[in-house]
Each structure stands twice: as structure tokens, then as C-alpha cells.
Image 1 (spheres, rainbow, N blue to C red):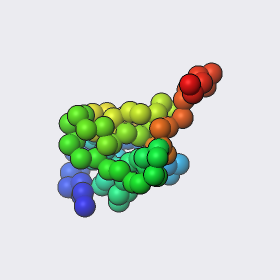
Image 2: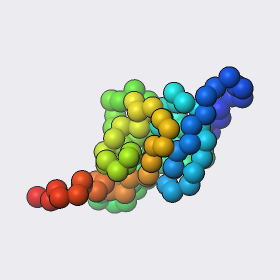
Image 3: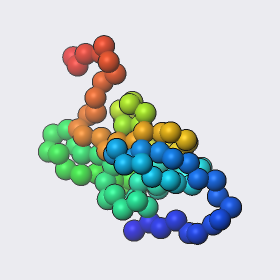
Length: 103
């Protein structure tokens, strides 16, 4: 679906995508990076569990939500990868930060 074009001048960073350590170009947005790694969705819905993927790629539709560095509901299309980032597919509404409660 997505493919990163070869470029020896890009700085690479190490990140974790769903627990797997990978190297990706610095400055790539998380949604594009996720799709380029062959992952076909970024989240599931809370009611039906259906798979959702980035659509608008500009932060408007909220279909690209992921858990980034332990924080759920992050728009992956407007977040850029950086060294050591931890990114996970979001299941449903995502987890709340420690100490928070669902109402």
C-alpha cells in the first residue's frame, strides 16, 4: 500500500510498533509509517470492533487514532516519529492514563 522510497540521506530512528522494534525515517508521520510497515489499520471501534484506518491524513476525520507513548486517542496522521517512540494499535476507546476512571 505505502512504500518508503530509498534515500540514504534520511536520519533513521528506532521505535516500537506494537512491541516490535523497527527503524524508520525521522520526520515521517506515524500513520504513514504504520501503513508503510504493512499494518492495514490503526484502531478498532469500541462497539463492533471493526478495523479503522487513516482516511484524511490531515487530522480531521479521527480514523487514525493510536496509542502513542502510552496515551490513547492520539491522531497518528499529525504526529511525527521520534527516537524511542512507542506506538500501539488502539483497541476500542483506548486505555485511560493510570489513576483515571471511566464514567
